Image (tube, one colour):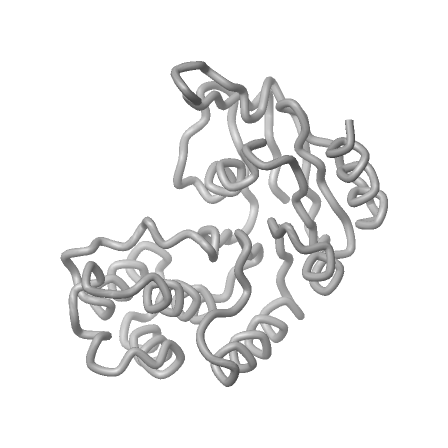
Length: 218
């Protein structure tokens, strides 16, 4: 379960303070794979980072029961001066998993070759994404947070990534942001619409998509 209690977060936009979530009390139940929908700039990525704990609320609190991933499309948490391997070891310590096992898994999965031992600041965006996805798949989470990406790389790598991701979701939930209704339908059964700082849950994803499309026309 993920529970927001009177949660508020503002961001600065062109010098003005804009509410991403505004005094929101809300529960995301366990056992649901959820698509997160909202307008461009509504704050969907920020909300994922708040749930992950990589950003802090202005007020209120978020109660997390279960192990929650960082947003899979977000690679800003890596330390650029450290190598991929060193970053993986750091993540292993944070999440309390066996370092050598995680390093071996990510080295094999991410297919970075010698770059795995090079500073992350020398990586292309695709290499960073593969590293981030590999680390995420190497740790078993109760919730996977996905920001616009489920697989990266060439066709074979994408196929491998999708296969592993589906295996993980057999025992885990996903909260996914995507502009693709097809992608959401593939992975999610229910939906949350973020509109003007408020969250509304829909047990049927199709209802959430319909409301979101109405909002976009409004």
